[in-house]
Image 1 (cartoon, rainbow, N blue to C red):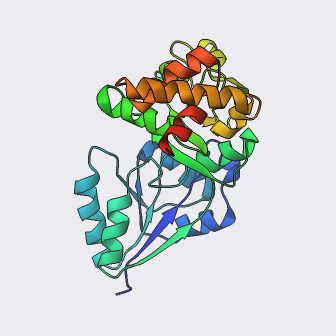
Image 2 (image 1 turned 45 degrees about the horizontal axis):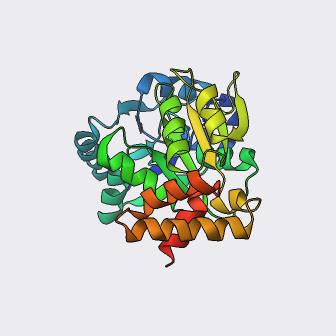
Length: 278
């Protein structure tokens, strides 16, 4: 009996023409594929001429399917892990299965390929030397507020996934938490027929994409230094002093940065970052 192996396969994010020859060979060479949606993956398998057995693995059954995947590996099967689009485990299930397979000594390899994260960063043109990936924002409550505050304090470009039902609210909350003038690139339906890449200020984006939309969205926020570049050191210094005075009177750094930005016009993210360095 052959030794089981796990192949983590990146799949096209919208255009099946992006499937590589190596991906096709990998899918033709495995016994079973674990996929978020077996119906969607069936189209990819047909496109590359592969016919392994398919099993679902999504957020609701990930724990159970991880155990099933391990049984397959112990039986000597070659197993592929795919997501609906892009690279598995990037805001998608599969991380536990990969970790457990490695812990049990099975070979874990990867077929690299498309990712909405890197595609959006490349398309945005905001620089890709350093960036943060935040996945999907929490839906509500303290967790969402905390995440927005952390994004406001980041000194790198930020990549965020957003659903068609939530993109308008996400953009509006980002505009409120950061600086309304921060540049954002909104990438919708990347590589698909109706691909759209739009660039502008956060507040304008929030108005443009208000309400429920169609398609999947990837947002790329410019780093705060980009907004700060045109603001002038004198105005930024004034804003930081205003924020420090507010903190002394009991405001949190986030509240103080927001109020100082509204009063002086300096970028909120830059103010907040300087407050953190105090």
